[in-house]
Image (cartoon, rainbow, N blue to C red; front, side):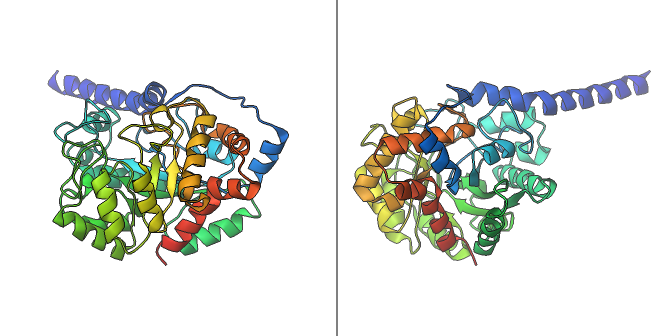
Length: 388
């Protein structure tokens, strides 16, 4: 009787595990990654023709977090690989989240809560991820590598300049190819050990942010408790990350951290996803001084589409932020940073990107400037800063 009860219990656990893997990803994406306006999206013939000729790069999407199979087209969430192809996206950053405060806000958070632990358990991630931020990062990186391996060579994970150049050469003959690179959102995944920079690099990560929604032992967050600058360990982090070939992402960094890193860095830095205070004044967005500091390093600024970034609910609001940034620091420093699948409500999913092209036309940008904003600036930045 006991053996029978045990067998039933094991079968029940496997059934629960299977249901969780099948049902939860789509449910969580639909709950947290909402879309205000769904396709079909309508734009002018001029915008559509221009859009089809672009090499589009987006610097931020958290699509690995919720466990959807990104090789399959989905009606939930903001992106998957089929929709990236439809939207003519050449390169998509896949950014990895490892810890988020339970009562999240943009003003003040601490590291004492961890909602990603519950997500990892609910989605049946490996038990090692339940208590380790490093293992969560490595698990999500493995997922992206598996998509690459299972894509039939239609999706490439970019690790180097050579990878990028080979991919772009292939894509000239086949526009149905797309690629991605791995970024880490918050250095809590280091678990206090800068030696783990090597572990993350070897797993495929090529960008890293010192902070996310709370302060770390390296630096202050714009949403942290102290909002301080780099610590002594943070200064060592900048040096070691640069020497290892990791590009520093200052999204979510405090003003003091941004200015400290921009002063210390010997290589260009960037902001993967943000708004600007010149069009949407809140603590999450960049001030003019912060934008100037990033531009002085040769960096780029990824402008997002969600309401906290733009104070609006359409592509026109994002285009206004891009115009403000271009006027302040130069169009060569403007890029896309959607924050798709980042528990955000977006005006559109990735297939709505032609609306952004249309909005940039309406802002008076030339076709060449639109090419730069939509991807060429980011491609130049990646060519300059990815490892050999």
